[in-house]
Image 1 (cartoon, protein in one colour):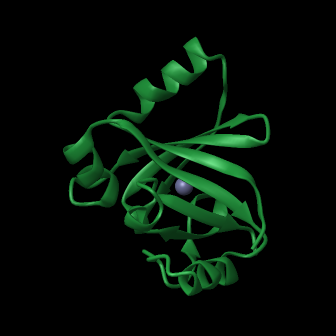
Image 2: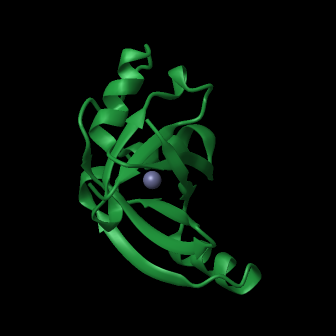
Image 3: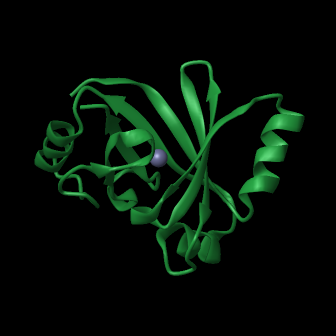
Length: 134
Ligand code: ZN
């Protein structure tokens, strides 16, 4: 597999609107999209930072993955996403190398991308996402 770049960094936040204000007022970035992803029980907001993005994640359900993450660890960096050519073979290749997967097969994430997660127990504690438009 070839990782092309860091596609985005996912950050878990308590309040999306407050978090957007920080990124806009303090860092001078501009939010170009807010999207709900029911599958992951989150609302997301996106900012471009050069070739990469910041993805803010607010939970819509305390039992969802971001709700549980914040409950355990509080707000903060949740995952790092790498752009790959195609998510399915990248997941398969990682599995072949003994990496534990959260997603055996890609699913639809924000912005219509095909995404899949590797388990942080296999990736030095960093929840790792692959994403591609294929
Ligand atoms: Zn992500």
